[in-house]
Every structure is written in structure tokens, then in C-alpha cells.
Length: 260
Ligand code: PGA
Image 1 (spheres, helix red, strand yellow):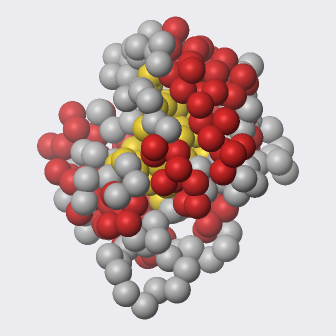
Image 2 (cartoon, rainbow, N blue to C red):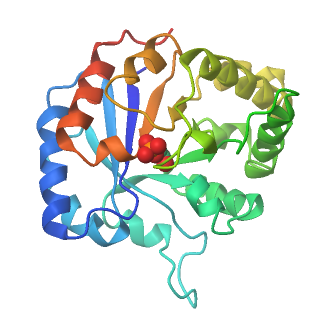
């Protein structure tokens, strides 16, 4: 399975010219990659322009969010039907920065369902705000997952990507990145939780769901998460805003041997 490296540009950069420059810089690297699928998620505003500058299949476009209805009176929202027309294949759903603005698990669930009803790949973000010694964070993750994927068939979920992003490791105010070992254990826990939700008979499908790590990923720690953490890929924020830094991560990913 190819590694999946997702760039989350968040509310950056300021202009379409800068966005295009960054996108072209990233594509210079992606065209040589063999074992890595890159997904760039710019602000909505730049998607159309970037879709016209897409040169390689190794570099896909993603959205940072979406709405679950197709059209109508939903001021400020962007629908999947609209995103389909600008080449978007992946959609980040339930990012912690959106949840911090009030997005609930119930809303996240509607968005995941809507992505899977069309042909999008939802990148479902989950993660706790604190890691306590008693393991309450594990119950939090379990509940967050149960609610986010409630009522969705195993068949549909075979297309989902899960990004584990502990909130304390995300963004400029992060305490530290997670460790590859802790991520490895969390990925096991996430798969166990999925088996609990969907049933043992779907174990093989569940083993195939990519689980990415996100939170302060950079060119120095990427290899550890992919190799020792056995991550199926990475969700990269700050380090994806610099074509050189992000390219180092992409090349590292391409060198790491394919997951078993
Ligand atoms: P960061 O962001 O890499 O800047 O910590 C990751 C994310 O929010 O997806």
C-alpha cells in the first residue's frame, strides 16, 4: 500500500500566486515518487486555480472541510457537489481546529456519510486533548470514533482514512509531537475499536484502513512515525507550507518500506 501524505495548509497562504508557487514546488517532488500518494488541502478559495495546475497523479487535491447537503440555503458552506467539480478527491473531516469552533461528533458523522455517499475519501481526524495517566483518553477516542462513524456500513467504511492527531500535539501551541511508539499503540487501539464497532468478520477490511499520524510532523520525525510507528501516512500542517521541508518528508516517505 502506498503511503498517504496529506498537506493541510489551513488558512494559508494569503494569495493565489503564493498557493500556486507552493503547489508547483511540491509537485516537482511528487512526480518522482513511487510509493507515496500526496494530497494537498489548500483553502477552498484556491482549489479551482490549483486544479488547473495539477500535473501529476501522485499529487491529488483535498478539501479541509465540506458540508453534507448538496445545495441550498446554507450561507458560507461548500458542498461536495461543488468540490467534485474542482478535482477534489479527499476531504479532511472533523479536524480538531474545526471541532474547537463547535463542530460536534454528530456533524462530523453527517460529513463522513456524505463523503462516502459520493466518491470522496474522508480523512477523519480524531484525537484527545490531554493524555491522562488513568487512560480516560482511550475512552474518549473510543466514543469519538463510535459517534463519528455511527450508522455507516463496513462496506462504505472500507474507503475511509483515519488520522490520529492528539490535540496537544497539533499546531503552533503544541506541547510536543507524539512518539512513534505511542502512535503505534494508539493505531492498535483504533483498529480494536473498529473491530468492536463493526464486528470481527470485518477484521481484514479494518486492517486495511490507513491510519495516519498528525501533529507537529516535520522533516526530522517523519521517518520515525512511518518506520517505527508503522503509520500508513502523515497529516502535515506547518511543515507543508514550505515546499523544501515538505519535499524532504515526501522523499523520506518514499524510502520507507511498504506496510505489511
Ligand atoms: P501541525 O498541524 O503539523 O502544524 O501540527 C497538523 C494538523 O493540524 O493537521
